[in-house]
Length: 298
Image (cartoon, rainbow, N blue to C red; front, side, top):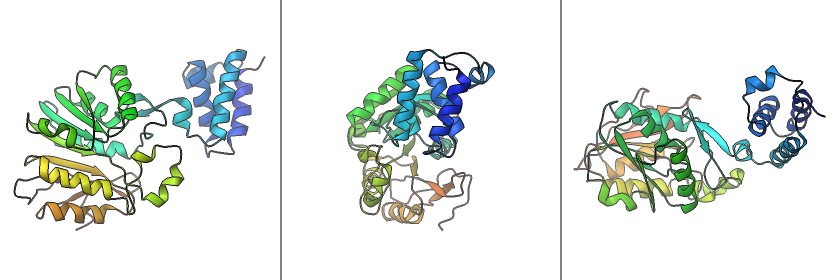
């Protein structure tokens, strides 16, 4: 019978065709199937693996060799310390989106009570991270996809946050319009589709509705900013994740609706402008949102 060592060697060899880190991916697939930690996998390399477990590992590796992203192969992925269920109904949570969470948490005091809003919640990753870090807030999370909201609901239950995060299906801020003035609104975060239509084919495994931002990638962001202007009270910090090269254009879109806003930009770990921030005001003038990085667009 095959040992863990045998399988690691074989699947590392095969996975070189699709990944730059075949050792890590082989180990993640093996630990997922065997329900053990990577430390356990490495500590007992000569332990034999059951035939049914080998068949399942083979199936998952074959899915990966067909180009399916590793998080979808595993059926789960980590974000901000939380293990989340992911399927092709939701975007794969990405490290750069943790910067969006960081920005919102800097705007929300640790002991604050009130509401936060997560627009385009997908798997619920951002809503879960916010609710977990700020135990006295309620998060209103929206998504246009029923399938995505179903996954988010499972993730909330997994982390026992279903009483702290309210899920809504609909277009951006529309389904929670009446809630936006029902309590103290602490922050709004939005991770919206921002991939130009022509580029969505490169991400074929992920849901188009969560990717496609129109011809220039900003169609949904513009609609969100229109709703922010029309629905949000004054004094609310707003944070938007944006794509590569989009910060200046999004800044301009903010200023068209909040003419005096001091728009801030937060960089990701690669130095790419990733999160746009500003604070709403009733007269459309706006104020700066909390920011640790310099405004590179002014």
